[in-house]
Length: 184
Image 1 (spheres, rainbow, N blue to C red):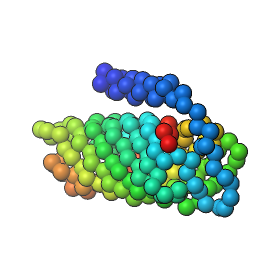
Image 2: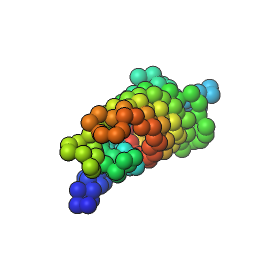
Image 3: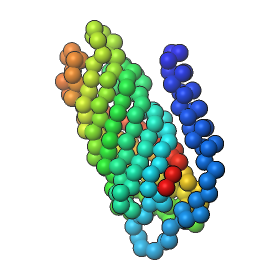
């Protein structure tokens, strides 16, 4: 219990530090509203996410509508009762903008990626591992006048378990929300 409180406190403190040190104005952040597709307001952002998983999150747009999303954190008592370290990388496509307003854009995104999960499996002698495929989809509120975005997503996962007696394969559904600060 104390470990969960410390991890959550660390995540909140990190988010506050990132937001408090962001005194740089981003006058060029606002993109034009031409066309129907999505064009990112930034290139690289870092932030936090809460849910399954919780931790640090980053996103790098290598094209205006395509990005690499990654995260490092933990999963709480998910699936089979084990807390554990979680690492993932996804490739995301932003095929359309659902809402376009002066203050923000709201793109829909979908992707595919992979994850590694090391967790306490309760009844086994050691930690177990999972290697899985992720299929995230969600929406983002990409603010035009401040260097922030907020997102909510669901992620279908399919894991292959290692060193977890009685479990070989496990499908599941993760969900989380997050906020990112955009540096460029």
